[in-house]
Amino acid sequence: MSLVLYTLCGTDPMRHFSPHVWKAVMALKHKGLDFEERPTRFTEIPGIEGGITKTVPVLRHDDAVVVDSFAIAEYLERTWPDRPSLFGGEGGHASARLIEAWSFLELHPLIRNIAVRDIWTMLDDKDQAYFRPNREERFGATLEALHEGRDAMVPLLLARLEPLRMVLARQAFIGGEGPLFVDYIVFGALQWLRVTGTLWPLKSDDIVTGWFERCLDLHGGAGRAVPARL
Image (tube, rainbow, N blue to C red; front, top):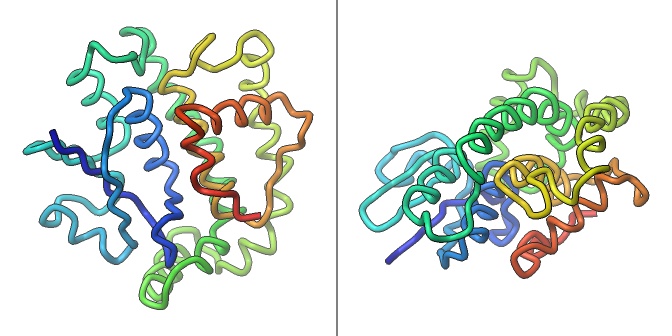
């Protein structure tokens, strides 16, 4: 069996930082599967598997190629049903879709604004030349303007984490007593900021911090394998 996961990196191939890649990494670890990480820079993504995608992660399993982190989690669940479940049943699968939408719409835009210029500084010249005009056109502002306004994003991000605090006041993980893919969705978003950003918004006494630290420790400390940038 051969498992290869294409990840996203800058000049340091060991510092993969995509929130979606982190979801896939944690899902593979959750299933207890050995896999090879294949670090890929932004401008190298179109060459993955013959141009199958414009984004990562991409998973190759023998002759199968799977694109998108949620699709990868579903594939792992179908292919290895005897290993620990990522969803905990049909209801957990449906709930994970809701959490993914919430994270993408409520958390990602703020984290992106906080970290986007920091990400640019992690790239080589070729990727920087691609990244700046692409992101500035997409977001309607210069990287510098987004960077200057990032402090205003912090209280908004902390407020949007309030539903998570309400859940974690009752249980150790979003998935219950143990982690599920729903945890990896939100973990991936915050890990994105941890490994790229020069601003970290969570305080040590925030209940979300305790949960995030538990997630970093999962699967032999897989999340800590890439150190925080700060």
